[in-house]
Amino acid sequence: MRTHHMNIVTQAKVYTISELNTEVQGYLKQRYPATIWVQGEIKSYNRNAHRDHVFFELCEKNPNNEKAVARVTAVIFDSMKQRLANSLRKIEAGFQLRDDIEVKFECMVDLYPPSGSYQLRVIDMDPYYTLGKIAQQRQAILEALKKEGLLEKNKILPLPLVPLKVGLITSYNSAAYHDFLKELAESRYGFRVFHIDARMQGQQVEQDVCRAIELFNQQPMDVIVIIRGGGSRSDMAWFDNVKIARAIAYSGLPIFTGLGHEIDLSVSDLVAHTYQKTPTAAAQYLVELVKGYLEKLERYGDEIAQRSISIIQKEEQQLSGLRREVIRSSQDRINQAKQVLQSAAWETRQSHNRLIRQTLLHLESASHRIRLKTALWMMDSSKAIGQLRQSFPKLLESRFKNARSQLEIFSIRRNAADPIQVLKRGYTLSLDSKGRTIRQLSGVRMGDVLTTVLADGQARSRVTEKRRLQREENPLEIEKTLL
Image 1: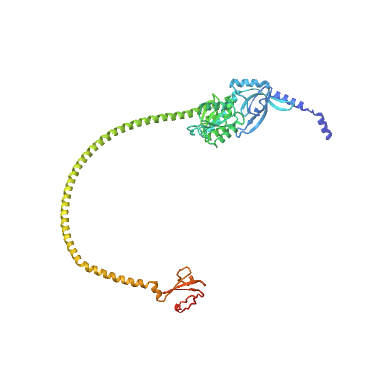
Image 2 (image 1 turned 135 degrees about the vertical axis):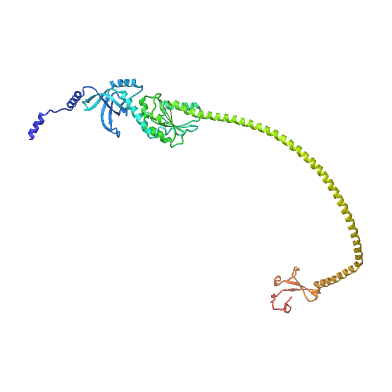
C-alpha cells in the first residue's frame, strides 16, 4: 500500500512557489482579461501617500454597524498617480485621495508572483462617485442632526454684548492662526485670545477639535472660534463629522467657524452659532460686534445728552414761569401783609392808649388807698410805741435779773471744776518725767520717776510695784510703796 502511494506521489507534478504563483496569475488574467470596476472605502492610504507606489486597502463595511466585512489590497503605481491627480483636478481643484472616503476604481485583478499577494492595480477612477458619496454622507449627517434638534441648538445661545474673551481652535502658527490674530490686533480693541492647538486635516481632527471645545467650555470664555485655511471640497469633509457637529451643538458657549471655503459649507458651519467664509472674516465679525456695541453706546450717550438738554430746557422754562408766578404771588402777599400790619399797628396803638389810661386810673386809685392805709398804720404804730415805752424799763430790769442769776450759777460750776479745788479735796495728779499726765496703768513702767502734784506742793517717787485694780476692789484701799 505504501509502495502504491509512493508511486502516485512520484507521478503527480510538483510546483515551485514561483510556478504556482505564476500559474494562478495566469488563471486570474484568463478570468479577468479586462479591467473591472470596484467600489470600497480607502484605508491606510495617508501613511503611504508620499511613496512612489502607493499601497493601500479597499474596505467593504456592513451598512448596519459600519464594521469591515471584506478587504483587498490595492496599489497605484507611480505612472498612474499623476493621471489620477489630473482627473481629480478637472472635477474639483485641490481634491485628493485620502482615508475614509468611498471610491470607485477601475482596476486590473493581479497577483504578484514574488510574494504571492493578490491585489488590485488601479488604472482609473470615477471622481463623481466619490463626491456623490461624500455629499450623501454629509446629507445623512444633517438629517440626523435635524431630527435630534441640534442644528439650531448653538444658534439660540445669546452672544455676549462685548465678546472680547475668545477661545481659538486651529493649527498653531498656521496662516489662519496669524490672519485671525492680525485682524484682531489691528482693531486695537482689548481682545484676549486663548489658543488650543488642533489638527485641521487628517484623522486627528475629530479628537483634537472635540477635546478643545470641551476644555474651553470649562473656562469663562465669551465665544469659541474654529478656523482653518482654504482647501478643496474633500478637505472640508473633515468637518462633515457628526461628533464635531454634536460637540458644537452641545457647547454652552457660542461657536463661530471660519473654515476657509468660499463655495460650500461644512456640517460644522451649519451647526455653529455663526459661520464666516475665512478666518479673517471671522475676526472681522468679532471686531464688528465690539464696534457695533461701542457705536450703540455712543448713540445712547448722544441720545441721553439730547434728551437731557431737552428736559433741562423744558424744566428751565417751567422754572422761569414758576419764578414769575412766585414773584407776583409774593408781592401780593407782601402788600396784603403790609395792610394787615398797618391795621394791626393802628389797633395796637388804640389798645395801648386805652390800657395806659386804665393803668393810670388804677394807679391813682391804688395810691389813694395806700395813703389811707399808711395813715392808719402810722396811727396804730404810734399807739404801740407809746405802750412799749411804758413797759420797757420793767422788761429790761427782769432781763438783767435773770442774767445775774445765770452768771452766778456759771461761776459756781467754774470754781468746782478748778484743778486746785479738786486737789484741795484730797485728789492728786501724777506726771511722768516729761510732765505728761498719767491716766492709765499702761503709761507707767517699773523704775519710772513720777511727780505727784498735791494742793500745796509736789512730791517725787519711783515705781517699784504695779498691780492692776480688780473690779471689786476699792482703789482707796490699795497701798502703794512710793519712794
